[in-house]
Length: 177
Length: 313
Image (cartoon, rainbow over all chains, first blue to last red; front, side):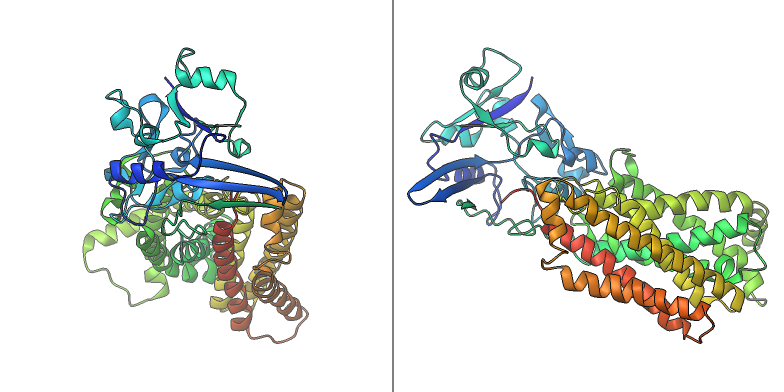
């Protein structure tokens, strides 16, 4: 099983509902966020192009954060998700420095925190909170190892890109373009 | 024109707008650990080579500082942790992929060794020294008997400690400035240079001071070569690494790096050492202080600048 997410940059309107849903679902402390929305503007008027991306942890297959964690708190879990075990984390910050996407932060309680792909919901058969609330239905979540899953189908049909694959992380967020 | 903006207002403390997760603690530790690695390297190397009588400062006096340097460094590392109550988790596992795990374990080996090494010379250095408990005399005799083995372990451990301070940073491919294997040798050379500077300052005989002044000169030459080499490598690499190099070649870190590290920390002490070798009288404290300042600035600048170099946004 290999969980991944596809984000349709042609449908995303940048409403940030995914960000708020995540904060509410996961009790993210005030002032922090596990997902965020990026707007890219290219060119000069009137030749303008815009892309909007909802971003979060890439749950990389070759995660630098898991590699550099000295205690094994950062680890691969259910379906290839990258998770942190709070009571093993010493808060050294190595994983935060190692993440090219800056997807991690230090929780006010001291341990490192990040997107979990809402694995607690996924285990119950529910989609992650951000996917569930998206008003334009631009987020797809599923198992890319299963060729019949919705995400596999959409990745077969559409062109996509991944963010800085040259960092050697083998990321699992697919941006449909 | 291309502009990338986080429109949902991500402002995670210590991550945005620029990564700022490591503050003074890490460079301070890298600096203190580096000096200790340098001193212990020379102490064990020259002991193995049988120069015990000749280089008393390197083998006997300077190592007395190392337990304190390592303890201070470890203290700084502890202060860096955000989840302090769980620090012991470091010692429940060995993770070969993680340089920080290597570092934690190598410190666990070299810190007691530095204490043992220093303790075995105390009676010789301070003739009135007496151990409070007789068992310590037995231990001392045991360790003195096996000094040669201790020296070998310490030699290897000090090399790992010296190189690891650089590897710790170079393992992060997310920070283009750190992601160069030159940092390992560069930080090791700097460790040996700062270690030699301390020994040079503590040396009583002219001969020893002269030798370590020469060693320091060679290390400075190697550091200069590695620094040039590092920037050449960056310039011939990917865009993010070119950007990283440009922080030092016209960007915000230009003045502080070239003035404090290269000029004050490398060129000036090298010049003074050459003058000394030519027979001029140069106060040794000045040369040592300059080398140490350079080493400290190198660590601080690399740690801070590395956090400012990135791939996205």
